[in-house]
Length: 399
Image (cartoon, rainbow, N blue to C red; front, side, top):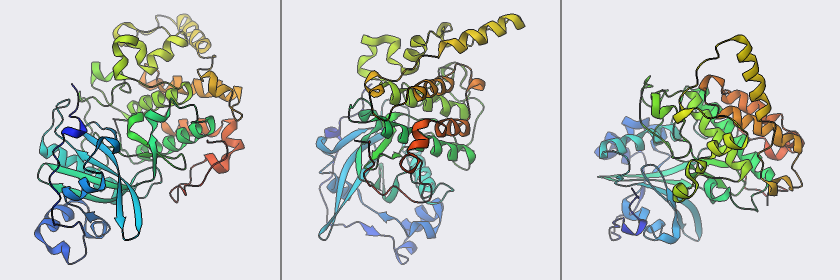
């Protein structure tokens, strides 16, 4: 089932109402008090701008195809510009739309908007350099949206296949994203819908996570032992469809698919499902390339019947991932190290292991990435700056 095309989204004519900053006097209006104070308190609310839907349309040229970036699980994302006198501010606008692909309701959509605003303005992750910076929102009847301040290159999904997306830039993205997920898990938050399409890359080649439709834990929703909701196509742990058992290791699996995509220049393409079959899934392609046997219908394999068989199986699987899955074009990059190719492949394959207990934690992932020679050699460029957002400067070897 396809999403509604951008051109089919109803855009109301521009009215005379202006977007307005929520000053202290505005907060005493019933709409502001009833919505914002309930969400995240007055102090955070005063930092945001409340836009009407007509303003979002004007920022994006009427949600035109030219400014369309891509789909989210429950909406669409567009490039935009806000004119402030003689200055132009580049922004990204995300709107929630009536989506027939997943069962949803206006109440659930508003709940997702609430959680996103709370995460970005009033949580322990507020101001994290790898989260988008929220500057405003729209909350009208069944017309919801947010506005991010962001100078965007493109989504990671679109950049992965580009030849000018170099090795150093890919490692920078992998490490910074891993650090972000480590922060999520440290605060007992599970994202559950990670995908390359939901990571924007800014002009400093830093990833910015911008969609959080299935966030749970830490005050953002109950963590249930079994839940059969599904996340991003191509990044879903195969066991979820069978057991419904989510955990932090589900995020690790999705990160592993992102990491495999970065090093092998591969993405899940819904248009190639018939052409590629199961090999369209990046993790299945990687299992096949490494000679890893697949269990039937992705069911968990039976436990070894003896210690001898267990030792043989462990030795056999250790031999399967000695080859590098790094794309040949990236191996020719001036900053590529052959040893790094083997190590990062091992790490990615551990992340997409069929057994969740065999996968590393995000803390372990970060530690392994920091041990790569390229990270040690170019630490001043690659290591994330956790205290401030990316400056947008040009990094040698990234382009």
